Image (cartoon, rainbow, N blue to C red; front, top):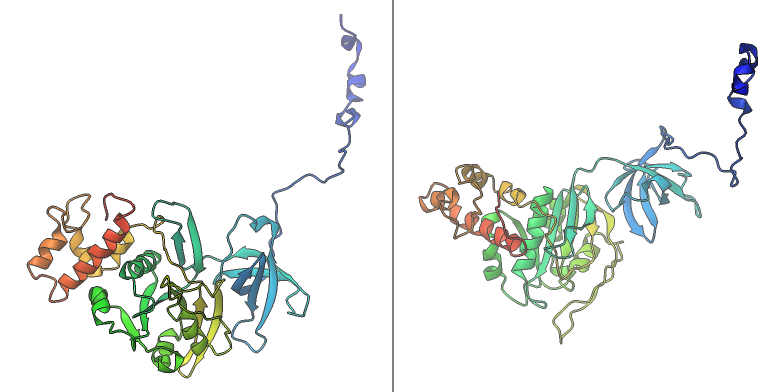
Length: 355
């Protein structure tokens, strides 16, 4: 018989969990918890720029109390990308006084994300800007020579993000851009042209297109993008460069993406300046979004055979047949050509069914 059998009920009742000795936590740490404060009183701010782990944010936007504040991210957001254009929830010292910091504790849902990848086969995306609704592509008619394929890549990324593209051609006093612009006739792009230097730019017309929008400026280095930004936003202070006469390439001048407020006679908007790039990978793009941007062609594409690529060699493509039959009017051929060129640009890196 075990000694436990000798215990009566009263003895058993004398034992409980408190009698178990537990070795104390040698680090004296409190148990970790996944519960986080709700931050119900957090203010909403616009992220204007990012620099080495510090975020410049704008609070009380469009009020007399509007001010910029320096912020850091909360620990729970350490794996969440925070980019220019984000709408963030901030807490802490919101006075904006020198030497103070607030804390970003959340990111509101994004309306759009403009992204790129390192190359066409790279599935890892790089977020350029959040919540932009327009992309203004800046190219030069010469010095450096315009690259239609790079512009195509910008347009594909914009269409994938649901962002309206615009086009500015600078330095038209050096070369006639007519032949270059013919590549984009089927897209219905709003195009602005200018000579070399801020004094020859149609600033009023471009400015009117910016009112009420968040417009991200993109372009090859040396095309005059920073010159245009400085002309539209006089206190921007964006560095400008020149084109190397040996290589024909522009020198990178803008090193970070920043949001700048445009104030014009017709109203206000946001200019988002980005560093110049020489490549724009499309590995992240959903090719179906390219077709959806051509609403009339997308409607006809429903008659296409399954897996149709809509490229010139695609058998039984309903779009090609409709254009040949004149169903889409006089502009149908140009729009089909533009669609096929964009699809070919995407398919150059990743072959497969589209749409």
